[in-house]
Image (cartoon, rainbow, N blue to C red; front, side, top):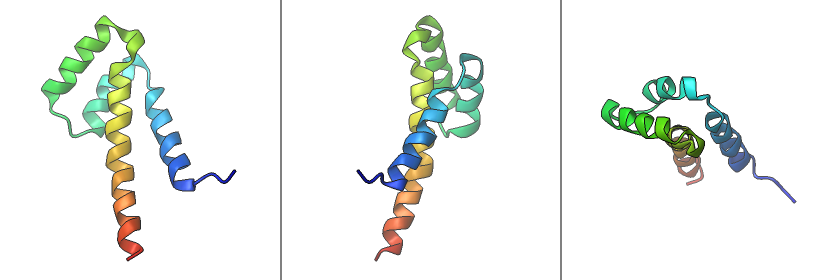
Length: 81
């Protein structure tokens, strides 16, 4: 089975952010995303109530991975024209 470098790279990137500790996730959301502070504060409050759901880490991983790899995907598609 061939592994597509692009997708495995995005997957590993996403996994890195999913493993963010509870202590760091709020700081990372504020540093690495363009989400409004109010939205971050709300998700962090929800995360503190049910940390086992890892809502903040999932949001962080999604936002950062899309920001980085969506741009990469657009660049790759533009180069293939």
